[in-house]
Image (cartoon, rainbow, N blue to C red):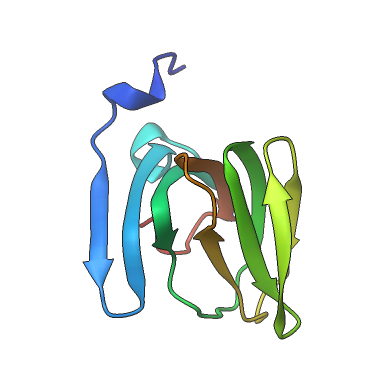
Length: 116
């Protein structure tokens, strides 16, 4: 069993073409013996965004805090704290922070997918 505050887990900052102001943490994953899922927590700084991409695995997302938008079906849908997002496999998606506060979300993916 693992019980700890997520902020104690090492984070990785992403800065490259197509991504800005994103920090991610694998809070439960393969290293913990998780056989079915990987749980990650991402923070997007104000104006930050994930890359627009698609892949074969799905995402289950819970928005913890802040205001943002998710790219889906060729357009942007607003999301805020308490919203859930299901992204099926092979669907193009992107998440961006359009607010002034940090945008934080929890993201689950199946085991076997790249954890970060």
